[in-house]
Length: 160
Image 1: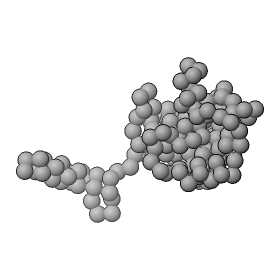
Image 2: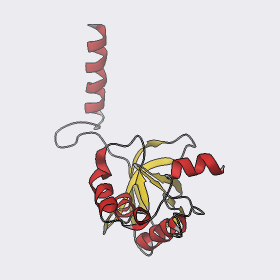
Image 3: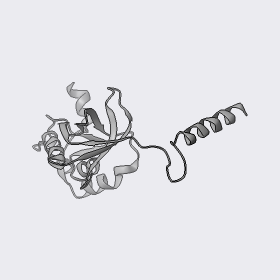
């Protein structure tokens, strides 16, 4: 009974503070700005180092057969963001304290674009957000899916 009281009290405080209420739902932390690209799934936006949530792009020096999958992933993210405002939805922190976020431009979700191009795979613990795009990229042999490759997580284990 005490736990329910605490939960309701917390909700009431959140409601009074404007975190919840009519037509509000939970407050979403978003930030926007131009992007500086670090690698295929990391960028800097509004002074924050961001790791794209839900994807694992090929490492910069990673080759997928004769295909420069890592370098092309980085180049693709630069191309997708060049001259555009990037908006990121903060979803927490990774083990390196980078912001985990879903980011987009007016053209769409950056993670989705990289997965659809075969330049990233779904992150091993991600929800099914990009499952369809990954299946289509694999079926149509886009990007790395047209070559033999090891997943980026395995490449990191072997290389670093």
